[in-house]
Amino acid sequence: MAKPKAGVIPGVDDIQAMWEASGLKGKLIFTAVMIAVFRLGAQIPVWGVHPEKITALLGNQMLGFLDMFSGGALTSVSILALGIGPYITASIIMQLLTVVIPRLEEMQKEEGEAGRRKISQYTRYLTVVLAIFQASLIMRLIGSVGAIDPNIVPWVFHVQAVLTLTAGAVFALWIAEMITERGVGNGGSLLIFAGILSRIPFYWGQTETLVAGDPQKSFLLVVLLLIYLVTIGAIIVLQEATRKIFIVSAKRQVGNRIYGGQNTHIPFKINAAGVMPIIFAFAVLAFPSTIFAILKQQHTTGVISDIVRYYEVYFSAGKPAYIVVEFLMIVFFTFFYTSIVPSMQPKDIADNLKKYGSAIPGIKPGRPTAEKLEEILSRTTFIGAFGLAIITLVASSATSLTGISTLAGLGATSLIIMVGVALDTVNQIRVHLLARQYQGFLK
Image 1 (tube, rainbow, N blue to C red):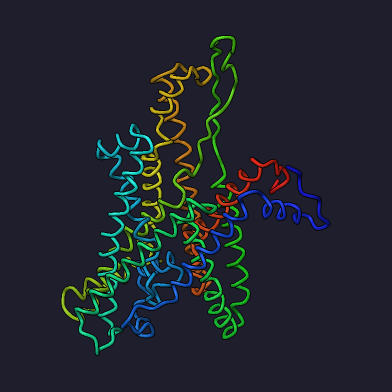
Image 2 (cartoon, rainbow, N blue to C red; image 1 turned 180 degrees about the vertical axis):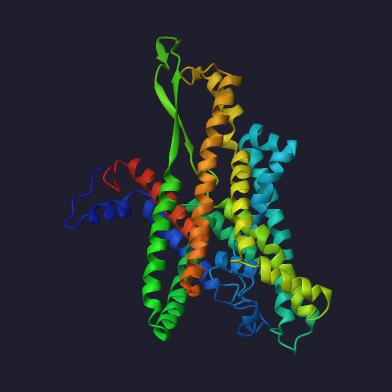
C-alpha cells in the first residue's frame, strides 16, 4: 500500500492517510452517525413534562452528575435523559460482584469469551433495573416541583415516563455497543464525551453573560482558564505515566527453534483506575443530597427540615467537611478499584511469568515475585490516588475561588473523561493506521 503524499501544511498528509485507510473511514463515519442519532434523541422531550419548571432541581448534585453524562438531556427531560448512566453504574456493580462472587469470577477468568458474554448479558439486565429505579426517582423529583401537566392522570404519566426513560437508556446502551463493535473507540465513553462537548457552548454563553455584567471578572476568567489548562496537562501526565517492570525470559528450544531470551517489561499505569474513583466518590456523596432534596420538598418544618438545613450548611458541596471526605474517598476508591482490575492482580501476573519461564531480575519466581509486584503496585497506586484527588479538588475548587460558577460543569470529572477518551480514541486510530503502514500519523 502506497504511503500518502506529503502535504504543504503539516499534518494534512496524516489526516488524509487517516481518511483513506482501508476500513477506517467507514468506522469513523459510522461513529459520527451514531453519535448524531444519540444527540438528536436527546432533543426529544418526554410527553407531559414542562422542562421550564424544573429549575428548582438544577442545583441537585446527583441530577447534575447524571445531566453531565447525558449532555444536558436530563435538564430538558428528553427521552434519553438517563443516557449511558445506568449502564455505567451496572458495569461498576458487576465488577464488584465479580470480586465477591466466586461463580462470576470463574466465568470471567476461566470460561473465556463465553463467560464474558454471559456477564455482559447480566450487566444489560441490571441496566434495565437501574434505569427503572433512576427514572422513578427522577419523575418523583419532577413531580414534587409541579413540572407535570395537571391534565394528565398522575399514575398514567408516571408509568409512561418511566417506561420511556428506561427504553431510552436501553437505546443509548445499544448505540454505545454498536460504536464499540463497528466504530472507533469505546462507545459509552464517546457518548459521554460528545455530551460534555455539547454543553460547552451553554457554559460559555452563561460565562460571557456573567463577565459582561461584571468586567472585573474578566481577569478571574483568565485565571480559571489557566487553571483548567494546567489541570488538563496534569491529567495527561497522570493518564499516560507508567512504571515499567523489566522482566527476562529464559531461552527454550522447541524443535529447531529457540524461543525466549529477550528482555521486555510490564507497564503498570500510575492511574490504573482512570476516572472511576471520582465517579464512585461522587455517587456516594451525592446520594444523600438526592434524598435530602426529596425530603426538603415534602417537609418544610420539623425535625427532618432541621436535619436537611444542617446538612446543607455543613456538608454541602464546597464546604470544608465535604472537601475532606471527598479527598479521602477518592484515595480509598482508587486503591479499591485498582485491586479489582483483572489485569492488575500481582498473583496472576506472577503465575503467568512463572508459567512462561520469565522473571523479574533478582527476584525468585512465584510468591516472591507476587510480593514484589504488590509492593510496586501499592506505590504506584499511592501516587496515582493522591495525584487524582489533588487534581479533582483543584479543578473543583477553582470555580469557587474565582467566583465563576458558570463553568462548574467542566470540573475534574469532565476534564478527565474528555482527556482520557481523546487519548484512547487517538491511540486506537494510531494502531489502526500503523497496522497499515501509515507510520507518519501522530508522531
